[in-house]
Image 1 (tube, rainbow, N blue to C red):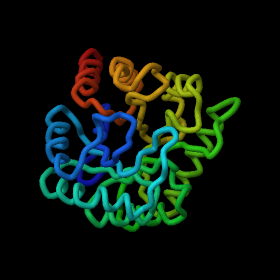
Image 2 (image 1 turned 90 degrees about the horizontal axis):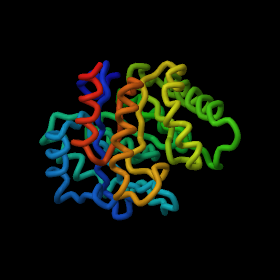
Image 3 (image 1 turned 30 degrees about the horizontal axis):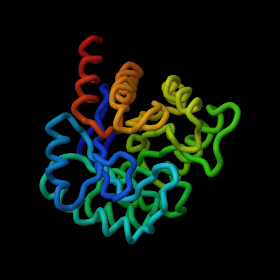
Image 4 (image 1 turned 135 degrees about the vertical axis):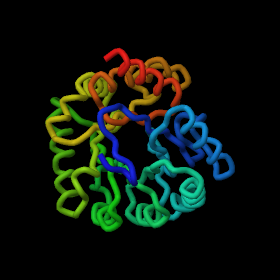
Length: 259
C-alpha cells in the first residue's frame, strides 16, 4: 500500500494514535499542540511507521464536534509534524471539509470511521489530492445476526465508491470497525476472524487498542491489546492502530522473527 512517499508491504506496521481531543477514552493518548512533537518523536523512536491524528473522540457516547473545531485542533500540530518529521501522517475525520484542510497541510491518509458514507464529498476530496484512505465499517444501528455479510458488503460498497471517485486501489486499506455498531461478542468474533476480510482484496488495518471488548478498565487492557497485535501479525494484517507503540511493535517484531 502507498501512503505518502512510502510503500508498506510484507509486515505489520504500527500506526501510533495521537489524540488532540479533551475526551478520548484513553487519557494518556491526549496531546496538545505544545507536546505533540515530543509525542511523535517518541512514537517514531519506539517503532511507529505512521502517525494518526484524531481531533474528534469517537468513544461510546461521544458528543460530535463540527469540522471547524476539528480543524482548529489539528491544523497547527499537523503543520508542525510535517515540517519536522519524515513520517506519513493520517488524519482521523469523516468530514470532507476537515479532510481538505488536512490534505492541504500535507496529510498522507484520511482515516474515515464512516467509510466514506457520512460525507458525500469525502471520496472525491481524497482522490483530488491523490491521498490514501482507510475505510472503516460502521453502522447507524447495532449489527444483528451474521456480522460478516453486513461488514463485507459495507466495505465492498465503500471500496467501490473510492475507486469510482478516483482513489487508486493501492492507496486503500480496510478496517473492520471493532467497537463500532457491534457488541462485545461480535467484536471478539470479528477480531478472531479478521483475516476473513481479505476476500475483499485490500490490505487491512486493525484498531483494537485498549477497547472495551477486552473487559475491565482501559488502563488494564495493555496485555490484551498486545496479544491482538500478535494475532494481527500472524494473520499478516498490514497495520495495527495502537496507543502503546513500543510494546506492540516489539510483540510484532518477535512474531516475524519466529516466522
